[in-house]
Amino acid sequence: MMRLITITGLLLLAGFAEAKGLPEIRLPDGFRIEVAIDGVPDARSMALGDQGTLFIGTRRSGRVYAVTDRDGDGRFDPPRVLLHGLRMPNGIAYRDGALYVAENHRIVRYDRIEQQLDQPPEAVVLARLPSETHHGWRYLAFGPGDRLYVAIGAPCNSCSEPGYGTIIRMRADGSERQVMAEGVRNSVGFDWQPDSGVLWFSDNGRDWLGDDLPADELNRAPEPGLHFGYPYCHAGDLPDPEYGAQRACSEFTPPALKLGAHVAALGVRFYSGEQFPADYRGQLFIAEHGSWNRTVPDGYRIGLARIEGDRVIDYSLFAEGWLSADGVSGRPVDLLVMPDGALLVSDDHAGVVYRITYTP
Image 1 (cartoon, helix red, strand yellow):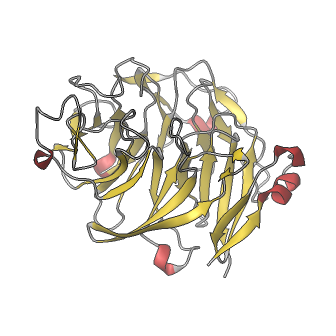
Image 2: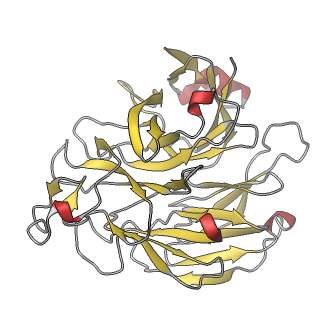
Image 3: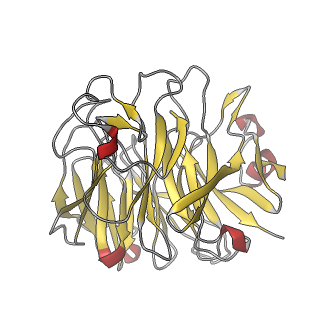
């Protein structure tokens, strides 16, 4: 069963005005959602430091935020602008005391960042990236073997450009670049399956083939070098009207799961905590950011993909309500499992971060 959680009252506790008009979010029984952090315009990717600092990247504002709990009361303090004047710093990751930031055109590292929040250190440039801004907001994360992964989106709706439409990986110092996956139009979220260490990632389908085609994708890459079809084939079985004659769909790796067309699947996260019921552990949450050009909007929710081994056996709604007859009140972007097992969700439309918890 799903139950209604009225967010408005929780926002009032956080200092928000009732005029914000936020919706009722539907969640399974036992789950509760609240605003953990407000005042973060354009909140996108999240990363957690060793000392509990939450770092939040943005796409349009050029800022990276830092949020702490200095008094140890279990609630986040007001966010601070840590870095500004950057170019699309959507992708962020944390490793060994350093904050890694993927701007549009480069990856940089800020050492000992949690000891220098009031005066961030100089950036160390690790890698140069293409500077095209179309799909130029990068997603960044560390995977197995301490390799740093970054998505290089296609600089267009549909085109064949060498070096784009890939997920690449490298050492933490930026050396030894390797293509992990190609034929990936625009991935803004990936994670690794806890038991197998296999990479799973979202991919946004192309536009202008109608309201219902092609499907967004959840993909699985058990080894480097697989091709997932773009721009020749979409969602495993739909030849592109311009490029489809050049290569057959049968040549490519099909998606592990077809999602709705234009739902803009972004953040994906395997649940690694222990707070949620046991049947959620090791399962994959997907943030559907929501359509921008579909006649009837779709997405604006969080889904749950239940996985057995290498197969998705079920996909169901977990949290919805940001899209209603009154319009759009929120757009989920990234997901992060906290040490206590709570699930954080960033929202670049409302400029907040939600916390989802479970109580039997």
